[in-house]
Every structure is written in C-alpha cells, then in structure tokens.
Image (cartoon, rainbow, N blue to C red; front, side):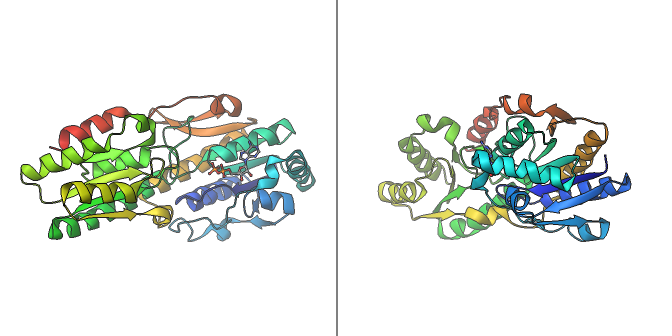
Length: 321
Ligand code: ADP
C-alpha cells in the first residue's frame, strides 16, 4: 500500500475534519501517501486533487464543515460518471479510496467497488440514519446544537408563558428529534418512524393538561421528516388560546465546532479505516456497534437494518407530566 485517496461526500457533518486528520496522519505514520480529493465524487471525476501531509491537517480538528469541501454529485448516478471516477482512481495509482459520508455516499462506493475501486467508508451524517452503525460522525454536535436552541427557547417561552414548537433536522429519521426531545425536556416529540400514529389533537390535549397542573410554558419537538411545524403552531394557538411560536432550526444544526464525542469517534474511525487498508482489506466500512469499532463488508453493511429506540420516546412521555 503506497497511496490512498480521501474525500468527504454528501451532507457535511461536524467532525469530518477530525476524520480527515486521522486518515492523513495514520497513513503518513505508515509511510503511505494521501491524496485529498475536493468536493466529494466531483473532485475524483474532475481531478480536483492535492497531496495532503501532516501539516495540512494542523488546527482542523476543532473546525466544523470539511476542509476538503463536499457536494452531491449527480454524475455518479450515471454509468459514464462512475466509470470515469474509477478510471481516474486507476490513473492516480491509488490503492484505496476513503469515503467519509452518509448512506448515499456508501451506495456510490458500492458502484465504484464493482469497477475495481477499493473503497473504505467512514460514517458521517448528523442524521444517524445509517443502518450499519450505531454512531455517525456529526450526530452528537447536531444534538448539542438542538439542545442549546431548546434551552434558549425555553427561557423565552417561560417568561412569556408561551408554547414553542421546534423543528429539528434528521431527514426521514427521528434520531435527532427524540434525542433533542429528551435532553431538551420537551413534552412531546413527533418523529417520522411513527408518522401514522401522530395525533395533533392528543398533543394539544397534553398541553392543556400540563397547563392545568401549573406548567407555564410548553416545548414540542417536530422532526423535519414529519414537517407541518407552522401549521401545528397555528392550530395549538387557535384551539388553546396559548401564544405559540414555531422555530425551524434548519442548517444551524449542520455547523459548529465538533463535540468531544464527535472528535473521538472521527479520530478512531479514521485510524481504523487506514489500518484496514494496511491489512489488505477490500471494500469495507468502519462502524461503531455495542461499544466497539468494527470493520464490516460494504455490501453486508448496506443490507443491514436498524431501528430507532422507541424506549427513549416512551420515557419522554413518562417524564413529561
Ligand atoms: P449522503 O452521503 O450524506 O447520504 P447523498 O445521499 O446526497 O448524501 O449522496 C452523496 C452522493 O453519493 C450523491 O450525490 C451521489 O454522487 C452519490 N450516490 C448516492 N447514491 C448513489 C447511487 N445509488 N449510485 C451511485 N452514486 C450514488
């Protein structure tokens, strides 16, 4: 193993830089050259590359976003695009390609693997919506950002005796929502995994009950995958007469300096990715399951299943009285 490539792809996530740093430095420690590829798969197709050495990743661990930049790459959805990416991998003389990204990026890796590219994945998405791993880089920072926002909204809701309906990110998954709901002390959380069970009349009933026992403010979390946040706030205000505000956190949750947890996982996963390459493993992904880092087969990883821990929601409801 002489030379590897590294790229970040799909949605950005805080902690990606810590993963890049770990990949570059672990490789250099073992005398392996690293080629940084800009803007995800686009940079591979267009040859936007640069050699990366230890000093290039100084002072980046604390930065949000990704120093390699990231993007979606529609060309990868075409036969021509994937073949071109695989051809450039070969021209560059790479022995492996480290892809730091989410589920979509992993599907791109599977296409490249079919064309002789040795791909190693590191899971990074704030949404935690990857079935092969219990942890994805960026999740903890996003939840902490959501929690900070909920704390601030709680202050003002409390002063004005209002109700706050807060929409958090997560695409089609409710992980960020139930975590924010729990750690922000919300009374209810609406998440896409149980979209068909959502009953806004019940939520409103709960708000009224809580007011009757002396609560002076209310906090409801809605996942992006459920939506309808503005309408829910309007309905609550109309039916209960309680002043209600909707807040959509949006991309705020994608930024910020990564938390200790994200830096730790990103560093360990970057290290394990390069170690797997040095051991001669082919087409693998690094995961974190049951308290341990594992290296899994890419195809098997893409076929795994994972379910949101509903117990968290049940406990939120118990604690909402
Ligand atoms: P994420 O990796 O965060 O889930 P996306 O779903 O946007 O983000 O995927 C990132 C990129 O991965 C896409 O822009 C595309 O280039 C590539 N990709 C996604 N799905 C496929 C696929 N089925 N085949 C080939 N490439 C894919």
